[in-house]
Image 1 (cartoon, rainbow, N blue to C red):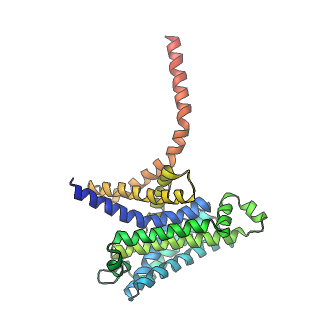
Image 2 (tube, rainbow, N blue to C red):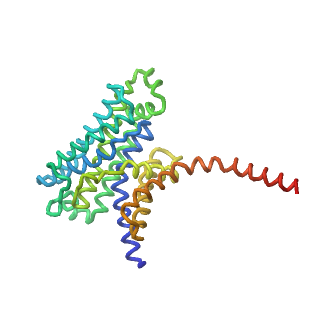
Image 3 (cartoon, one colour):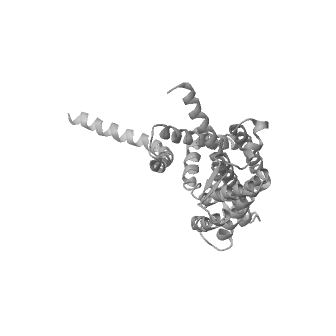
Amino acid sequence: MSISAILGLGQTALELGLISSLTVLALFLSYTMLNVCDLSTDGCFTLGAAVGAMVAISGHPYLSIAAAMLAGVTSGFITSLLQTRMGIDSLLAGIIVNTGLYSINIAVMGNSSLLNLNKTETVFTKMKDVLMDTLAVVLVAVILVLIFLVLFLRTRLGLAIRATGNNPDMVRSSSINPAFTITVGLCISNSFTALSGCLLGQSQKSVNIDIGTGMVTVALASLLIGRAFLGKGGLLSRAIGAVLGSFVFRLVYTIALRFNMPAYMLKLVSSFIVIIAISTPYLKSRMPLVKRRWAVKHGKEGVDA
């Protein structure tokens, strides 16, 4: 493999990793900080892509970013409403919203399962003269989201959201409404997810109804990989770790495609990465016990001999 091919693979993985990292940061807020597993991620990602594409097609590429994020806020609000006001479990609420979003996304896309943006001006074509290429545009978006997220989580409301994830009873006893903090947290996290979908759809010049399928798995795997790299530092380093994990995950994906792995096998690769990322800390904690048992067993065998 030539150096140019390796650099090309690296750039592709970096671009896709940065775009996906916005969804990873969304899970960083909802799953890590708020302790809510939001399974509406797949549908919200597609919603952001669909809304962004339709607004861009209508001739407003910059407005498509705001419209996609607003659609994500709406999705997050409905998910939180089911949880906090209707007593539905968070996992089930995410599944319900994700299922309903499939029909909504088809409607947003004009009863079509595919949108073609080849002849449409997107935010990337608009910013080409200023920031040169796709990578620069996505990098700016990720940096802005990172700065906003870190600063927000250090505000009074952000601290309340983090406290809700740690101990909702304590938050309630402090005269803070957990329903409000959950709603705000899910609205913000879903806006990041929708932004990620919007940028991916416009970067690849097409949006299909399955564009968000499996994104919750990808984001969760990336989040856990990032935690393995920078999981014990401060808030900023942990957020950067989430972005790094997204790049590593996409790099593995890209390498797998380079070796002509069938497309249908990539979901299996995602599953294996999630299994490894989740089980590694547990297996590492069990290693001292395994070593002791091995030492005791072989010590006894030596005595018997």
